[in-house]
Image (cartoon, rainbow, N blue to C red; front, top):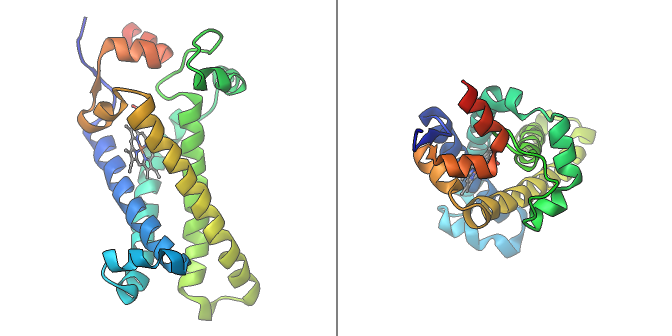
Length: 203
Ligand code: HEM
């Protein structure tokens, strides 16, 4: 039996870490612009003027990288009947009870939900961000909608990423190595993504 199973290709890993960096930059500079209480963050990124100029560019880079990831992963992120059952008993997963929790494919239903949350909030951030970037060209109604939507989408997306970082660094040992080096052990695959592991075995 192979001792290492490829979980993420190098393209997937490079795209993931680039999206993570661009997200952190956009989120932190965005927080600096959003509230005077967070303005101290601007000093970390080169001052208010620099942050005002580069935040939208960071946002565009983030949206483009996420669009690339979306193209590669969207088909694998569709929810199937097992995923719907998984979501219905997700409290058991959260309590670490395995009984009654359906086996997961390459991504479990929680990971798939994160993917859809990030994809939809990125779309909203991108569209409302463009309106806020060029307000003089936009009708008043659109400007008002953007002022409201941009921070709401940002809060949803930052909240999702906090949960994502917590899950992948503290709750699921071995996940970080998978995204850093690309491989997992057969035991890890069988215990966290049993359906994926079974399907790999059949190939
Ligand atoms: C900056 C801190 C981040 C860390 C430490 C991190 C860590 C990880 C790890 C370890 C995995 C692999 C999980 C597995 O093997 O099952 C993963 C997957 C993934 N990451 Fe991240 N990530 C970060 C940021 C982001 C950002 C900013 C996004 C998108 C906006 C993102 C989107 C995803 C998606 C869609 C997956 C696949 C599904 C999943 O495992 O949740 N990540 N991440």
